[in-house]
Image 1 (cartoon, helix red, strand yellow):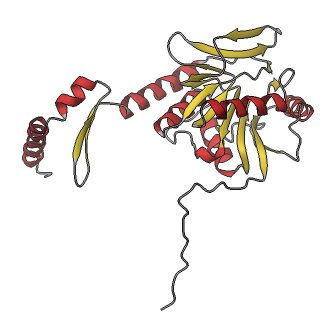
Image 2 (tube, rainbow, N blue to C red):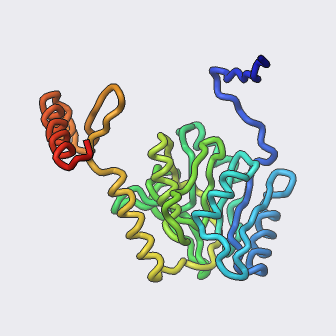
Image 3 (tube, rainbow, N blue to C red):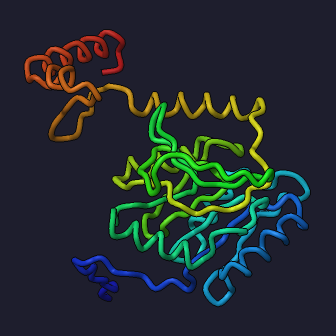
Length: 272
């Protein structure tokens, strides 16, 4: 009987060689606007010997929504860092050398980061950003770099080795900066707003689709982070953000009473 090939996985993390340092990924609805963006990146030092450029062609309608398209970018880009950005940005201020320094500084501060952007929030009050809009007014808030739980979508940079992906059960063109930060946090990574000032030619549009997707994201994560019992084949435990309630529900007697309740419930329904 032939012996199947065996692959030994080293104990230490293997650093995969990427073909490029950066992959710049964009949804294109206007080729002229994308061309200006592309030229600004090249002039800022993101040359093709260090970078690959990927795009999703939405010029004839939305062939890709953001969640579907970005997941393809994240899976297929052959680069250490994957930049996901709007087509209406221009690198008029900070350049590639600035980004390299900021990422090196972030590595020293917290090597556990997985995604960064130039504008983000941490709670209902704290905002951290530096970005210039079409009126040439530079908006500066908070301290940079700063750990965040949500990032604006105009410019996102994802560490390829973190193996992040967007939610399969969401779609559209909004809130993916929040979704990817929540996914990163669930996987044990961090997200940061860093200083990378660029010119953003629009401020976005909060239309009906924005509010619809915001509601879907809220419902998704409210359901995911709900308090509940988890049972494995060998143990059971209760999850809750409330420490006191979690401790109470994990008392052996309480778990036994709850299990008895479910046992009676399913037996009476004929499903047990």
